[in-house]
Image (cartoon, rainbow, N blue to C red):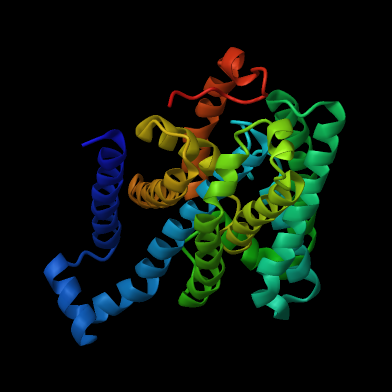
Length: 335
């Protein structure tokens, strides 16, 4: 078997194991046989509690990880930049600001928060890309501009959360990420993310085309700007909707695409997109389950676990600046 088969086999086995761990771990301990029987009969009170509390966070964690990882993969494709990630360059912070703003002004529009989060993500994305193009669209320039935009929106978020009481509960939900979510949140996230991921499967060949030089693409009659614009909107949509519902989780879109390329040893987006969605879902689900089992009396949010993992990884990538800041402004991967 080749690397691709081994890679998919590994992530599927790890995902099943993590799913079982997530289902069975927690304050309520139910044997797996009792859990299955209770789900079938619907008469076991413990199982019903697990169904209402544990199942939503598992589904949300998986779909959030899938959305963020594919979003990062798409951003790296259109920018040819291995450091591109919605959490790093401020897209997630912009989405969160618009989400909190609409909740402060009109909390009855909760189910419209994904739309306003998308607008916030687009605004942040335009700011980052605009300033980055002005100073030269290189990986480290993008990081500097992204950190600045992220800081601006983070400051605005802090002002909102500290001065407006009516959004304090939503802020708490975002800080915990998955622990206070319901089946309504699941329906909202899955409906957007499932459609977004489905579209990405059909545009994988566009991402492969963007690996070529722009001059080559223009000579072939490829509408490069339109393709980049559409893929950027899709990446922002996936990241923004996820942020609106579960909060900001950084580094997933940075870490997962790199791991996927290393494990599969390919740059073919027809393979990377489905694999990254599975690997991203696995990573965030593992982080959430680890966070609620690591300490007995408290939960560590999945976002904090990802910061601890992703921060050193970003430093490692920046340390390898000789390969990151190449002639094309992107990292060279082994095929």
